Length: 442
Image: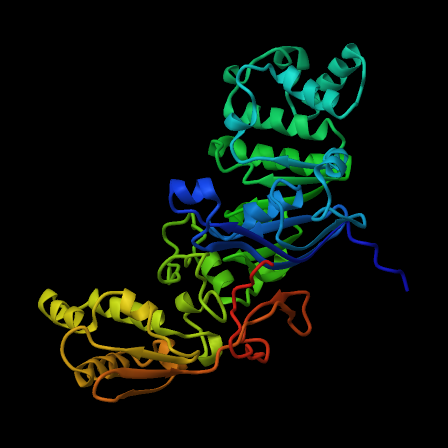
C-alpha cells in the first residue's frame, strides 16, 4: 500500500490575537482593553500541488491566517511547519531566506507596486534582495521571462513602464510576475481578483491555473467568492470568527454542505437567471465582536438549526427581544423598552455560567417574565428557547437557566472526506466549569 506523501504545510492549533487599544494613551503606553481572537485554534494540512480555498465573510480571520503563514503576523500560540521547519517560532533572520519559497499576491494591485518604481525595477529588486541572478543583464532577462510568463508580452513593452501606466489587470499580472520570479513553492493569493473588472477576473484565475500546472505551485486562495473558489480550488475551508467550521473537497462542500454557516454562504451566491426563485433565508445579524465571541459555538446566535448546548446566554435573549420590537407598533415598543432597559443590563448580569439574572428597568419582575413568556409562546420555533431550561421571578429579578454549553470541535463526518465543527454531527463535549470558549494566548 503506497504511503501518503508528507504535506507541504502543517498548521497546528494556531492562534493569532491582537490587543485592543481604544485611545492614544493606551497605544503609547501599551495598555490593552481587550483582545481580538483573529485566528482561534486552526488546524490545516496542505498537500504539495493543492489549491486550498479559505472562504468566509469579512472579519472571519482568513487574511490574518494567510499572513501568519508567511510570517507577516506572529502567532501567539501554535505551529506552522513548512517542510518540517516551524515558521511560527523562527526569527526574522532565519525566516527571510524561506520567503523565496513562500510568496503572496495581495488584494489591491494598485497598493502592491511602488508608483515611483518601474515594473522591471520592482521585480529586479526582489531578485537582487534574495541574491538571485547576480548580474544586471541576467536579472533583466529573468524579469522579462517572468513578465512574458504572466502574459505581459512582449516584455520590452512593459518592463520600463510605471504602475500608473498599466490597467488593473496588468498590475495584478505584474504582481504575480514578481512573486513567481523568485521560484516559490507556495503562493498565498489574498482576494487576487476582487478589485479587478469582471472582464479580467476569469483571465487572472486562468493564469493562476496555468502557473500551477507549469510551475507545480501550491496555493492558499483567500476569498469570499464561492463561485471562483468552486472553479479554482481542490479543497475548501470555511472560516467563521477565527475558526474553521467545515472543510473538505470542493464537490462535497458544494453538493452537500453540512454546517449551517456553509449552507447560508451557498444560499447567498447570486444566480444570474432572474426567473429562478431561490430562498434567501440568510443568517440574522452580523459577525459578532471577535474580542467578545459567543460561548460554545460562535455561530449559534445566527444559526437557524442551533440546539440547546450551543452556548446560549443573556445577550441572546436581548437579540430575540430586539427582533420582536421590529414587528410591533411604536407605542408597545416604548412600553416594553422601558420595562427591559438598555443592552448593558444583559451583558452584566450572569452571576454564574448557565444562569442569567435580569432586573427590570421599570415595572415589575412579573411583568418582565410575562413579556418573555409571551414572546416564547409567539415564536416557539426560535432556537433560543431550546436552550432555556427555565425562567422564574423572585419578585425582584427574572432568573433564566440555560442548558449546559459545549464547544464544537472540527471532526470528520463518517463516510466522507469532510470535517465539520457542529453539534448536529458530533456528540457534544461539555466545557469545564469556569472555562472560556475563546482561547487565550499565554
